[in-house]
Image (tube, rainbow, N blue to C red; front, side, top):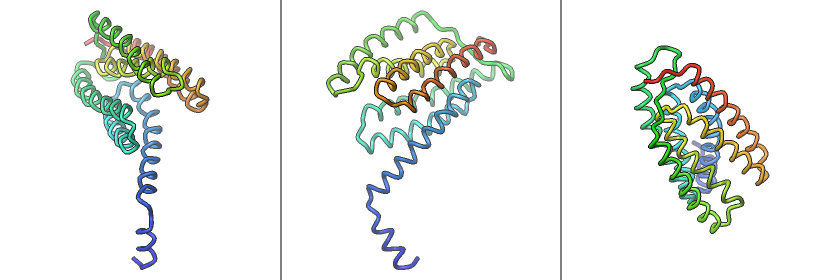
Length: 208
């Protein structure tokens, strides 16, 4: 290494290096997000591996930026991805090639999920209003519903797609409200994918 190259590297401010790392993580998350949905529709175990990697990367990114709630949410996604990978690998052994393994949704799960959605949305809305969120009710409802839908996905409940449809529609409305047009378009694609995913799982699904 020449002296000039060494001096150039020493002269790079640490914050610029970290900013580059964060941008790379954001690009990684955007690319893997589309792949994640595709693998979810096909019910491939690799989806959870991507979920683990993306959750860890995003949790680190948000921690560096001191965005603690989003960091915690991604740690939750990472943990559920580990559980989902274990459960899907176990259930996939009970169905044939090309079949989707499903589990019946118990009434008690629907009950606690509904209670968690209402109470969680109200509590988070209150918190977001205190922090000056642009659309606290929409933001809170979409976030809490996504948390519940991710857990349902790990359990292979068919109706998890319905939760994702509603969550994606809410997220689309949120992005339109805040002027995030490209993100709104992305969530419209996610909504359409969730509709297709529901019918695909229903057609190919086998209860285990």
